[in-house]
Image 1: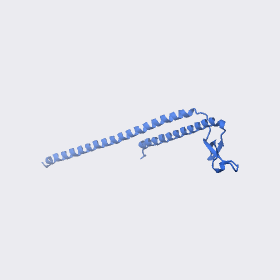
Image 2: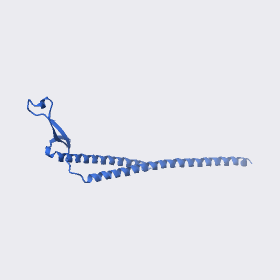
Image 3: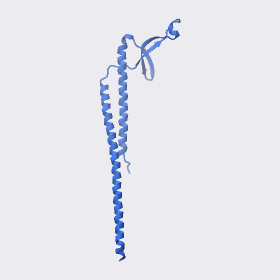
Image 4: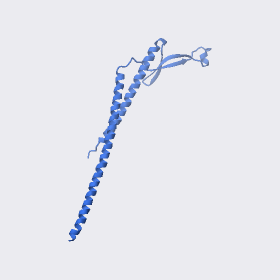
Length: 162
């Protein structure tokens, strides 16, 4: 008789514990799904960044595949003083401007004077060199962004061997 009196309590307790467990599993699955959904959304955004960076990099590479003739260096205007003792350049009004090409090779800077008749061609070639260098810098920056994004993806899928 006591068994029958206890039986409904045991059943109710088991039912509630099962319901609690099922509820717990349900909540756990929702949280896990949300986390996975957030992870999937994050990875989708990262992949989109990579696709955009690759497209920009491709455009930059296309521009650099057919360069104009270039001269290494930057064009400057130089003012000089002469060796005449009574010249106005001794009092601060120097001679010039004279076109000069500043070149840095192997960490050493040097200046090369440019003839006036060569100035338009040298200016165009130095500008082409600067433009090419800027394009290379953009490609390097995009490569770093792609590398960083790929590292983010790797972190999401990396597992430790047990």
